[in-house]
Image 1 (cartoon, rainbow, N blue to C red):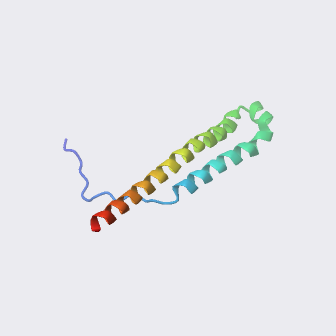
Image 2 (cartoon, rainbow, N blue to C red):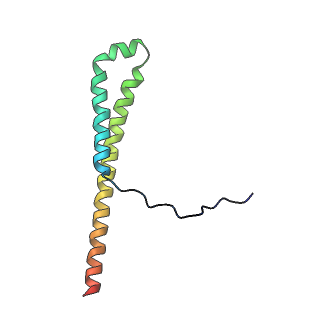
Length: 92
C-alpha cells in the first residue's frame, strides 16, 4: 500500500492572542465551579458530583496553561528581538 502524500504544503499555524484566550477559558472554568458550588448537595444526591470537580480541574489545568503560554510568548518575543539585533549588526 502506497503512503499518502499531500499535494500542497500545509498552511502556517495561526497566531493570535493565546494568553488572553487561555486566561479567559480558565476564568470561565473557575466561574462555573463557583456557580455550581452552592448546589454541592444536589450534585452529590444525583451522582453528578463529577461536574463540580471537572470545572475545578479545568481551572487548575488552565493555570498550568497560562504559565506555559506566557513563557512561550516571552520566548517568542526574545527570539524575535535576538533576530532583529543580529540582522541589524550584520547590516552595519
